[in-house]
Length: 216
Image 1: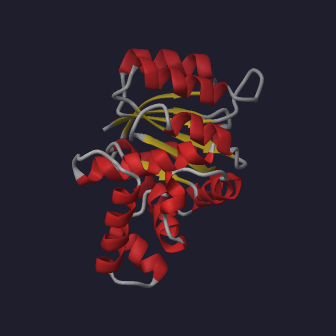
Image 2: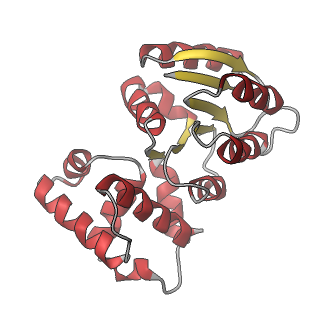
């Protein structure tokens, strides 16, 4: 698996290189701005782009705009955004752009190396990884009648954990319930959201996207 890193902080970039190499990735390019990131993705077409939300020259949304362009032009490249603060509108923009291969984490998550590596691998494999704080803010912003209103409080809790990218076992551990109970909740969620028949993993991603779309 090959990766490109775009982060203007040299110290953090060095750390990210080490972490990705620990995870078994080959870092084929390191950049400090969005323009260089796009050039590196065009040259290498990596499996994963690890992108800072705010980069030179404006330190606003350069990373997000570059990530959206990557999703359009190189759809096989997964994108994991890193941000200093919770900016949930960016998460919704990216996660509704195309199913899977997207993550949005706060930079503080890098400190938990094992958990961060798990998120990186999940995104690179076509899954999702959404920071728990982003999920919490999306839930707080949600309102109005939509299919998500059919879900029970427990089902919404399970769906939020799915949005973080947790497996059934991970959800069960978090909620202190059995995996069979989690599987039942997920089946109810998929049915209540009227999702089309597809493989289980793809339907989970569709459920997460429905959650995000209804939260924006």
